[in-house]
Image 1 (tube, rainbow, N blue to C red):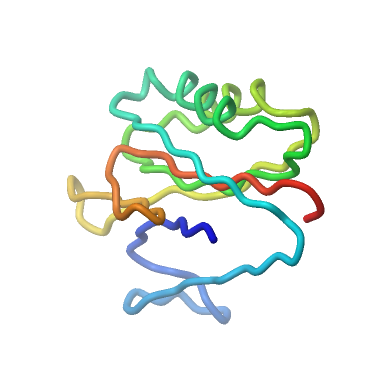
Image 2 (cartoon, rainbow, N blue to C red):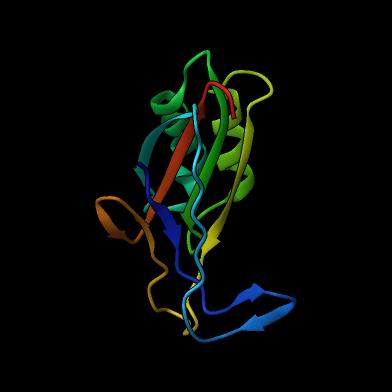
Length: 130
Protein backbone atom coordinates (compact mmCIF):
# COMPACT_ATOMS: atom_id res chain seq x y z
CA UNK A 1 0.00 0.00 0.00
CA UNK A 2 1.09 3.56 -0.63
CA UNK A 3 -0.28 6.64 1.09
CA UNK A 4 0.34 10.17 -0.26
CA UNK A 5 -1.51 13.47 -0.11
CA UNK A 6 -1.37 17.21 0.49
CA UNK A 7 -2.88 19.90 2.68
CA UNK A 8 -5.27 22.44 1.21
CA UNK A 9 -7.37 25.23 2.73
CA UNK A 10 -10.44 24.16 0.75
CA UNK A 11 -11.65 21.31 -1.42
CA UNK A 12 -14.05 21.07 -4.33
CA UNK A 13 -16.45 18.22 -3.70
CA UNK A 14 -19.93 17.48 -5.01
CA UNK A 15 -20.06 20.74 -7.03
CA UNK A 16 -19.28 22.87 -3.97
CA UNK A 17 -16.22 24.40 -2.35
CA UNK A 18 -15.75 23.18 1.20
CA UNK A 19 -13.48 24.93 3.66
CA UNK A 20 -13.89 22.60 6.63
CA UNK A 21 -13.33 18.92 7.08
CA UNK A 22 -11.30 16.31 5.31
CA UNK A 23 -11.48 15.18 1.71
CA UNK A 24 -9.74 11.99 0.66
CA UNK A 25 -9.84 9.31 -1.98
CA UNK A 26 -8.73 5.70 -1.84
CA UNK A 27 -7.69 3.76 -4.91
CA UNK A 28 -7.33 0.01 -5.17
CA UNK A 29 -5.57 -1.75 -8.02
CA UNK A 30 -5.85 -5.46 -8.67
CA UNK A 31 -2.57 -5.95 -10.52
CA UNK A 32 -0.79 -2.60 -10.51
CA UNK A 33 2.41 -2.43 -8.49
CA UNK A 34 3.22 0.77 -6.56
CA UNK A 35 6.50 2.40 -5.55
CA UNK A 36 6.83 5.54 -3.38
CA UNK A 37 9.45 8.21 -3.93
CA UNK A 38 10.23 11.56 -2.33
CA UNK A 39 12.72 14.41 -2.53
CA UNK A 40 13.36 17.54 -0.48
CA UNK A 41 12.85 20.92 -2.15
CA UNK A 42 14.25 23.89 -0.23
CA UNK A 43 14.72 26.41 -3.07
CA UNK A 44 12.94 27.03 -6.38
CA UNK A 45 16.24 26.59 -8.24
CA UNK A 46 16.20 22.92 -7.21
CA UNK A 47 12.91 22.17 -9.02
CA UNK A 48 14.42 20.65 -12.18
CA UNK A 49 16.91 18.53 -10.26
CA UNK A 50 14.13 17.37 -7.91
CA UNK A 51 12.22 16.14 -10.96
CA UNK A 52 15.29 14.30 -12.25
CA UNK A 53 15.80 12.67 -8.82
CA UNK A 54 12.15 11.59 -8.57
CA UNK A 55 12.37 10.15 -12.07
CA UNK A 56 15.49 8.19 -11.14
CA UNK A 57 13.72 6.72 -8.10
CA UNK A 58 10.65 5.72 -10.13
CA UNK A 59 12.12 4.80 -13.53
CA UNK A 60 11.34 1.30 -14.78
CA UNK A 61 10.22 0.02 -18.22
CA UNK A 62 6.80 -0.94 -16.82
CA UNK A 63 6.09 2.50 -15.31
CA UNK A 64 2.71 3.73 -16.58
CA UNK A 65 1.87 6.74 -14.41
CA UNK A 66 3.10 8.96 -11.58
CA UNK A 67 0.84 10.57 -8.96
CA UNK A 68 2.67 13.39 -7.18
CA UNK A 69 2.05 16.08 -4.56
CA UNK A 70 4.42 18.96 -3.82
CA UNK A 71 4.86 21.80 -1.37
CA UNK A 72 4.00 24.65 -3.74
CA UNK A 73 5.64 27.49 -1.79
CA UNK A 74 9.04 27.27 -3.50
CA UNK A 75 8.32 25.04 -6.48
CA UNK A 76 8.73 25.93 -10.14
CA UNK A 77 6.16 23.50 -11.57
CA UNK A 78 7.32 23.67 -15.18
CA UNK A 79 10.96 22.99 -14.19
CA UNK A 80 9.91 20.05 -12.00
CA UNK A 81 7.83 18.54 -14.80
CA UNK A 82 10.61 18.98 -17.38
CA UNK A 83 13.09 17.22 -15.10
CA UNK A 84 10.67 14.44 -14.24
CA UNK A 85 9.48 13.94 -17.82
CA UNK A 86 13.06 13.70 -19.12
CA UNK A 87 13.76 10.92 -16.61
CA UNK A 88 10.74 8.70 -17.32
CA UNK A 89 9.74 6.35 -20.15
CA UNK A 90 7.98 8.13 -23.05
CA UNK A 91 4.21 8.32 -22.61
CA UNK A 92 4.25 8.12 -18.80
CA UNK A 93 1.21 9.94 -17.38
CA UNK A 94 2.03 12.50 -14.67
CA UNK A 95 -0.73 13.83 -12.38
CA UNK A 96 -0.93 15.49 -8.99
CA UNK A 97 -1.29 18.74 -7.15
CA UNK A 98 0.23 21.36 -4.89
CA UNK A 99 -0.03 21.58 -1.14
CA UNK A 100 -1.36 24.89 0.14
CA UNK A 101 -2.18 26.58 3.41
CA UNK A 102 -4.79 29.16 4.29
CA UNK A 103 -2.56 31.63 6.11
CA UNK A 104 0.32 33.26 4.22
CA UNK A 105 3.64 32.04 5.58
CA UNK A 106 2.18 28.99 7.30
CA UNK A 107 3.15 25.45 6.37
CA UNK A 108 1.97 23.65 3.28
CA UNK A 109 2.20 19.96 4.04
CA UNK A 110 2.55 16.86 1.92
CA UNK A 111 2.38 13.44 3.47
CA UNK A 112 3.23 9.84 2.77
CA UNK A 113 3.34 6.61 4.73
CA UNK A 114 6.27 8.01 6.75
CA UNK A 115 4.35 11.08 7.96
CA UNK A 116 3.87 14.78 7.17
CA UNK A 117 6.59 16.84 5.47
CA UNK A 118 7.22 20.44 4.49
CA UNK A 119 9.54 21.44 1.61
CA UNK A 120 9.04 18.04 0.02
CA UNK A 121 7.64 16.31 -3.05
CA UNK A 122 6.04 12.87 -2.64
CA UNK A 123 5.08 10.57 -5.48
CA UNK A 124 3.83 7.09 -6.27
CA UNK A 125 4.74 5.25 -9.46
CA UNK A 126 2.16 2.87 -10.94
CA UNK A 127 3.63 -0.13 -12.76
CA UNK A 128 2.16 -2.79 -15.03
CA UNK A 129 -1.53 -2.78 -15.90
CA UNK A 130 -3.23 0.35 -14.65
